[in-house]
Amino acid sequence: MKSISMPQVYYDALVELAEQCAPEESCALLVGKQEGGGATVTDIILAKNVDKNPKVQFSIAADELISGYKIAQSTGDDIVGIFHSHPDSEARPSHTDLKYMAANPVVWAIHSVRDGKMRAFWLDESGESREVAMSFGSC
Image 1 (cartoon, helix red, strand yellow):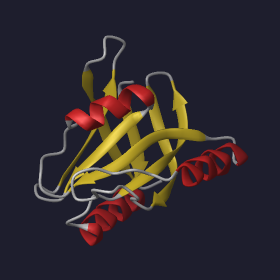
Image 2 (cartoon, one colour):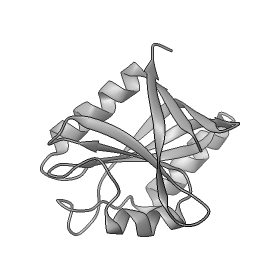
Image 3 (cartoon, rainbow, N blue to C red):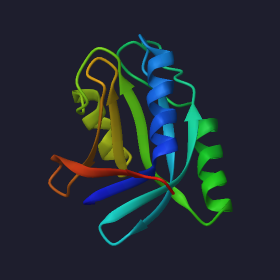
Image 4 (tube, rainbow, N blue to C red):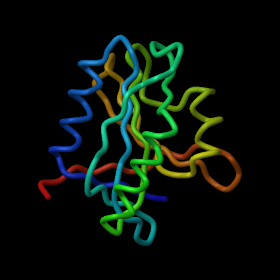
């Protein structure tokens, strides 16, 4: 995966969610299509962080994940990414994120509330996280 693009309105909604949930991590599913080496986000599904320790990690309930996949498939799309925030650290995968990225091989978009930056990552075939180019448009 080389890139992910999303409409500016979705970027703004994810940043707002992250700021509202701080000091806890926020999370969402990114719905869209993968084509070639990139993904295009066509919708977002905001999710509740149900983790026991929501200030330092996130978990999405299984029924909410299943519902998200069903919603995406009903429109001919798929889950192309997982979003979450880091309230007090930089926008890069934590050790825990890397473990879950291996089980969920989609783009992981991370927003640092502290730094005001969003970055995206993909776990390559060798298990290394690679930064993915992000773009935000008007569509």
